[in-house]
Image: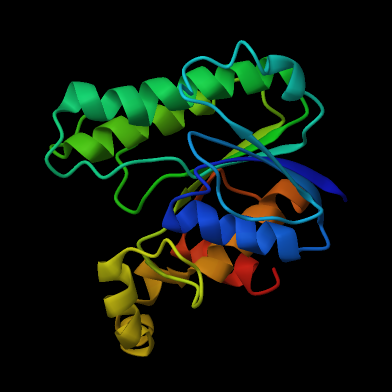
Length: 221
């Protein structure tokens, strides 16, 4: 299957890695990156749209049709954020974009980067986990072909890329130990990107993918 991807969040660590894997993959025919600033990558598969406000896609909606997958890697840390501000970016922006994409691409598979510990009940004590859970739940109500919510824990960055968070890169030095002690909560960024491509091209039996799903899918299914 020749997957045509729209990718959001390419200037973050996860999005950059997913873009890297998408451009390498023979399963992916083309990638449209949409973001507030350029991802700084050039490739024959890649097209880019830079917008000042992702809440306003009205001027580019005609360019968002005909895609079979969305890799939604856009997000922020909840540290130091009030719930309304975090919810505006994590829930409102995601749903705004996803609703438009669903209208233009009913055959699309939507792959959302969530996080380990997300609260599907939307009623737990952790603010970020409730908001992520609400986002997951509402995405699965949209008329896409399929929605897959990826819940990685620690993600080992890809060596040589530019947007790895300093803490993630440092912790990555101890990845072999983490993989031995906390196998259910760690994966590499390569595995995450490949797992998203797998889900978009071949589907999967569950809508929520933890590291126990991500690692085998990202290692060849």
